[in-house]
Image (cartoon, rainbow, N blue to C red; front, side, top):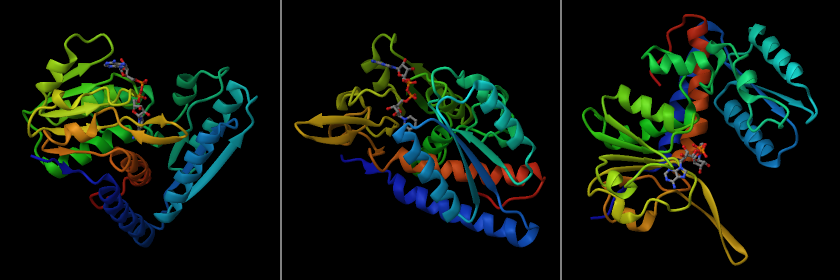
Length: 293
Ligand code: NAD
């Protein structure tokens, strides 16, 4: 058996199309154009590329994008003060502080300055709490993307055994909560977990968010299961390099029912879900209905 490949690029493209339609409706019926403000501190080259790509995707969907690029030496209070200004700015619906921040800045303190209703990364304590409490809120983009991908092949996840490998605040924990909200029976595995191979073999849905190239071996994958690989790892072979996931893809695809590739799986969904959150934030802040996205 060879797994169905879950084409994240294509699915994200369709989602972006639905978002662009919702944005057009908000503009036509309510004269609202959702706006995202991105705060970048310092000169990290990868962060600059991410911020540019997010800005381009936002504009392509018909929304407004504003970038605030602050020098590396900016104080914690100055970053917090900018976030507070953006909270008060009615033209801004979403605020994103690009990570990592320089070492002298406490990331959680800055994140918690963001108004929860503009927290399109879903990382404030309030939104993390809302997720725990099954309340409506803004949900972190990558985990949301994983759920949307899994549902393209298994629309009803209820009752399935889900194993999430990784317990980060950004991916593993919120993904586990979202799977629980879908009525999965969820097990969270991490670096201290015993018998990881056996645990993975029990998974109807196996999600890997570790950051270790091909840690999850093909024969850890249950026959017919859904495998969502969040990992993005660059491996070097001589003077060439390529991206691989946390799952041994070629072997895993011989057993899984469906699997996300790396690249082209979860990655494209993350930006699409950022656009989705910005649109939802714009509508919810004004109590406007928004077409289903
Ligand atoms: P992280 O380093 O914060 O967390 C990694 C987790 O893996 C930890 O909870 C740790 O306990 C667990 N872990 C480490 N070694 C392990 C082992 N040997 N066995 C089992 N568990 C182990 O990483 P993160 O931010 O959650 O990111 C994970 C991966 O996902 C990275 O490769 C990252 O690049 C990728 N990522 C991708 C996207 C995307 O858009 N596709 C977004 C965010 C993160």
